[in-house]
Length: 417
Image (cartoon, rainbow, N blue to C red; front, side):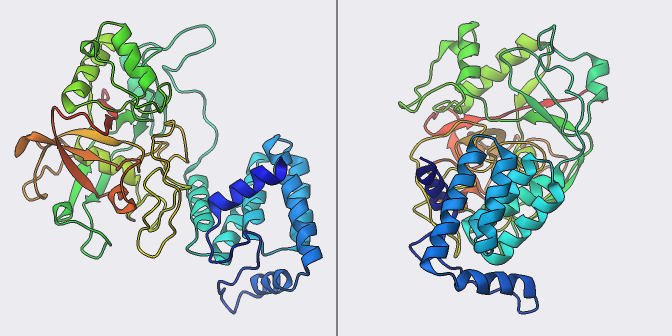
């Protein structure tokens, strides 16, 4: 069983022309890095017996990792890496194990080693995501206000609680409400540069947008559970969208129009006494980027181990991957540096903005654009059916307000200053 699960993980992460996921690595490393070169030379010189011995150790260690026996898993990976030190997959999972043991410094070092050993591969991208998540994480903080507590239920925030919120704090204002994350005030360059691969003309010109105050945004896209709670409470016009046989629960609600999404935020506002809304297009790009400037928040390449899209296609020279042909639960994959999940892929998300073919005359304060073709509204983020270029932070599409296919949404909330 350990061999089955471990090889599945290897196949989902590793991308190389060689057939054996544990075969020798051939990507070049800097000549000056004697340590990496020595590790690579040792791995390349392994006999078949030594390679099998290392693989068996890695598989047992992975089984222990799955069982959350992290100290034993660490010892297992380390023993295997003594034999096969340049095995990028084992180095990655040792780093994952060390994170569980709270050794962040050594984990960071191993993630960097993975990137150096196998650059431009799916597992290197996974390591880059882990490094960015580590860089974004701060010291542990007390549970955010408004979330369910030991002797109470989630309830609307008081003015004092709102004013005490800091970036990355989270809250819920009713049991069935979406969890919200506070994002910081700041500025960013909206749109894509001329040099970005697969850029569309409607993504420009790039322009500076400034958010004068922090605001809150859904940690996840609205789920079927949350939508169904609205219907059960007499809201959302009683509309029960199809899940296409994929399942409801924690999957993002799909097959909702822009008009349908507006009925949900109206119900949520009535339920909490607070003003919930759809995000503006500028807000949606701002929270997707989370302070980054690359096509995706983790970097300039993408793989299906990082997002849900049509993996039959690649972005630039990157890897192809899995085409799942359905949505996944909203807490799949890693969150971005501001704590938001699946801002790339899975489901296209409605925004408030009317469609315009570019940004000339667009607001610079982060507000929604309410002029243009308002029979069409902007969608962001890409979906499980999109090619990877459609998931870029700057990518945008349009759809009629009454159309339901392949659409979901995420909610926003302005906070009391």
